[in-house]
Figure (cartoon, rainbow, N blue to C red):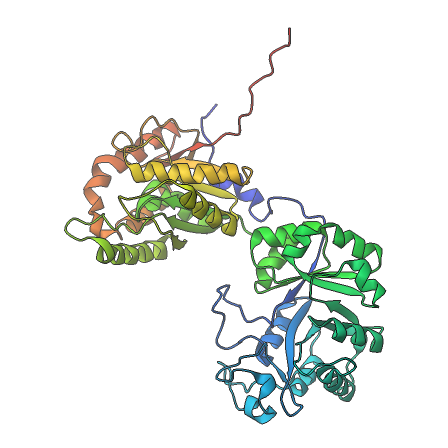
Length: 485
């Protein structure tokens, strides 16, 4: 039987499967509208947070709901913004309505009024989730923001059965629930149990995910009481998966597309390629990453260092700058994203802080597959990189498939006996282009002397022209159980 597995296409049937079957099907609420359309935290200038444009974009994108924040100005006007600061204003609640409206968002919109928002809401299908911001003027028996909002809702003839009201103010939630028995009202504070909220007449809870980590039983308890459960603001893959598995009804997130893909089971598999220096991921498995990217995988290269000691005659920050730019050029060819950790080339460390740094990266990325250096290697940075990744594999409960790649076998990588192969014949030229972006490393003679023969030999082992080879980290499975005496 032919030795080796073609990793890319062996996995492609499961490309859009999440790592676990999610029993719950929560609905996605876009936090402050769909402003994060490029999947990056800096958002999109044409659809800023809490803008008419971001709400309309959330509606066009088909999410269940869109959250927006309402503040009462000093003269009784209502504006949509998170507050207290907006553009150049320090506290919108202490400024006049027209002063706030004279400020403009990145897309040119004036800070929206609630009237403008409610007019838009009536034209959209998405569920509006209206957050009433706590007001410093709130007193027992007097809730001026809620009073003003109630008048606006009546004026615009909003269907109260299709609106959700949320607030950190318990008094606001109690009064909103009393006034609008058909409206879903959810308290944001986090300190009240479902039983306590139900006794107050509030029919929903909307807590930070850390609250449900401490009290997972509150989800089932709320459902038993006929209440709805939302969770905010859930942005990381692992947290979205965990909250979905708890069975919450809605997830509020700054990454609504990511959340919807996880819930629908259409999230592409996440691949990390973790190398000690710029050029290690490309030389070790550049062909594989190109193939995976083409097959639809989410691929990211992680560099332990910026190669500070890797250019003869150039040291420190200048070498790091040059090599970081080379990484950008290489990733433009492979299609992979990239990120740098904070270790220093030639001075890499193994200690608790470094273990935790790697663990945090891997937890935040929540990969399905990780490639890194084989730990038996002539370069200390390579060995350290491998050990840090292996430690994270164990500390995450072996939550991802771990593969080791080789670089300059016989000179650097040692004692490497592959378990898996990838035929890179079709992308060999692109791989070399990506590798040669690292001009400071003068890789041409390295490849002629070591990598090309190595890839040809791995191709022979795998019965193809050229291949990249890997060792799969096993989980201690036993070949057989010997009979007990």
